[in-house]
Length: 199
Image 1 (cartoon, rainbow, N blue to C red):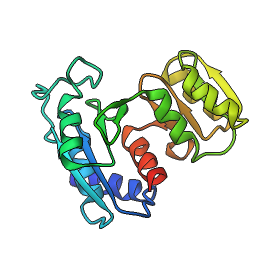
Image 2: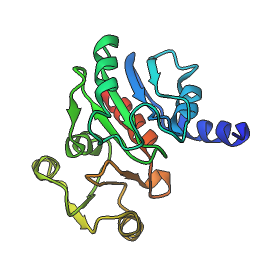
Image 3: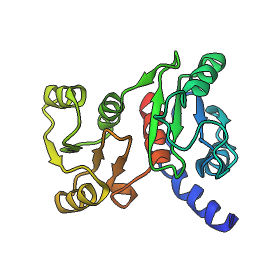
Image 4: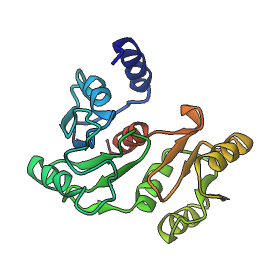
């Protein structure tokens, strides 16, 4: 791995990290590419106590496979969150563009609920894919926030974000998109946004 690129990416991500109180978090990297990034990202942050599991990239995916939604994939994360008495846990897919969360009891948090929580950090409309459920729609309606519907898929959401200049978009697949991340999806940035909002 080219450490120059890794260092540059970590330096870029650090600009988003604004945690204000101590947090304890467990990350399951699914033997994908988020492990090396997260290890460098939080190494010197004194407010974040973190545990990385399945952090070594391995294309054989020995822990539980690359899909966090596969049966049993979240079991190790749930146990680790409870053991560490963490504030929450996060599990990434192999390439790190999707993320799913577990609460302090290691219980799965539906992507709609995670999106609703993240949306509080942004102003203006929110783009949702057509499969999004009632949780986030009800939350945004109560907050008098406009919802812009999108077809499912990266291409459609990114195009719509650029066209409407919307700051945040979410898919039920665990993809979260940010205008300040080039209108792209990032599991790591989504985890950072949750950490900032939780602190």
